[in-house]
Image (cartoon, rainbow, N blue to C red; front, side):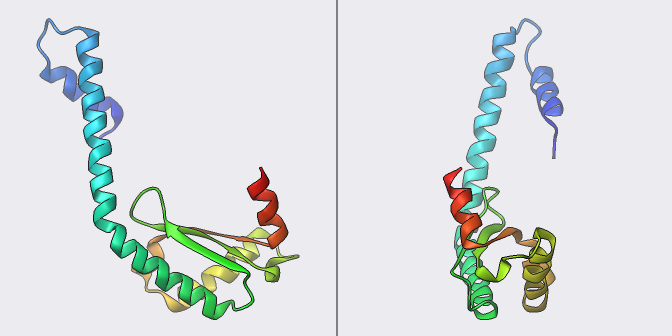
Length: 136
């Protein structure tokens, strides 16, 4: 993957010697727009797979944490992984690291390593914490 500097240098090297900074900026904007469009197309290609995986992951978590008030799993912004929240009274009095250990113990026992890499984040909240988070 090229850095922004590498992309800019490539564009500059392809312009004629009499090009202005405006020409450089215009070409950079075009390249940025093309890259964004490519990401959107890439996301659309993966969306059915991500939705299916989200459903599977939510089912696993519901089966393993039946007292959870809500479990939300959805595609992450990168278009390749999923993210979500688990809202449960079970997390009361448990620090964040132990909550994550509890969630990931479930995932590691139920998902393949490849599937585990598709999980960007799952944040564990008590109902009160989630309400406070939503009010921010």
